[in-house]
Length: 305
Image (tube, rainbow, N blue to C red; front, side):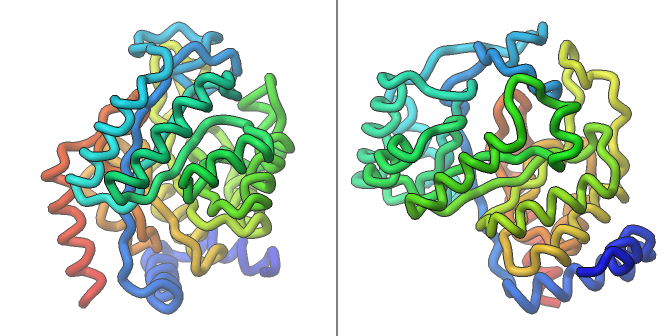
């Protein structure tokens, strides 16, 4: 896509851009809406300095912290995810890597979930190596999640304890062992429109399967606590541009949708999104399930019109 065309998307009247994004979603993906849910299996204690993250030891926040949950707790959460109607269940841990015993516990949990519950299992466990990712796949893991967070240019302003290349290398390692990959980022951290477009193209080049778009929730005690919240219209414009660039990829609205979009969450799905995280996030509480079920019904009606 030429730069002039992308510049025109940034400035295109929002109703026209919405129409283009919705048409693109319809042509490439139809009316499939994917739901997923996660468990915060290990919270806090992270020595990385990601400026947006409440779990970093570089920040002083009042989040609940805990070591890796036992296999039984993870399996129980997977059963609940199945009961609330999601297709994919994600196991998420804080930190940039796992200890061997932690990886072993998660592998045992994945094997049992696959055998007993019958839900697609995903995991977000940091910058794992090829051999570790192979073990997870052999246990029954389907999809690995590892966000690139933002553009390569802006990344160094958000994190200094590891670099953008490490994120990309982990994504490529997961793909190399045959795992699907979920990778996206956060908008509203102070990045430019060009950063957002660059992130979308980086994800396109990596051939990511699923792209979660999080909207920054400024958390007290983090380095970004005083960042001005992104506007609803900018969220919708970003989602629309991602859909036009990524065409047939799953685009999932994740953390921050409630505060950034408010009563206009349905617009996110007219802007090209076709997936949603329900049941809560890592350190931020989500909406009541009943409200999300109602939203899903409304979205499907809109898509059918």
